[in-house]
Image (cartoon, rainbow, N blue to C red; front, side, top):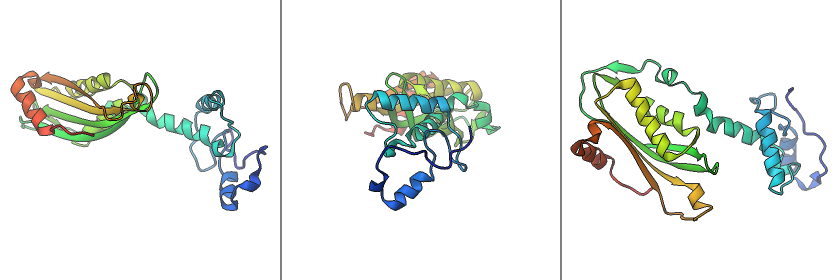
Length: 226
């Protein structure tokens, strides 16, 4: 589909819009797709957004919503980009042989994900530790692994396990520990509406199943309210 340079005629009173804002709107993409300098969005996601707006009682032709289907489509493509991510490409050879046999810990890794039950965000921090078995990984790769699994429709329990299992698969360490602390908007803004609750999940492999090693890890990450 060709890029849309101007918006089609609307039935709304455009005189109410400030001139500067109107110029910007008329030069912007509408629900038909992207402008010349923008990445095209998925037309099915745009149409799904338009249907959602209509079924919610909104008017997709309203000025404030002209670009919404395009924006939402691009947003969902980003929020679910973990489905197409390739772990090997992300690691990019950053696994190194090293004779280090003490705990490696990266904590307070921020993440945002989407609850698969209500399509609402949950967010928080992930703490990752591993004990090498002759191989270490570039530290920045651990947050990137978190992003792979966070940028999907998820449940916190599964995401925590997937992160730990991936580190086991690619590093074969003596042990791995992953703790995830998160707030869930599906509990905060709907349903039970409990704004101060947060959820903690963990996945422990190898040496971290031993009480002493687990206790050391839990002490190092501490406990904190998000």
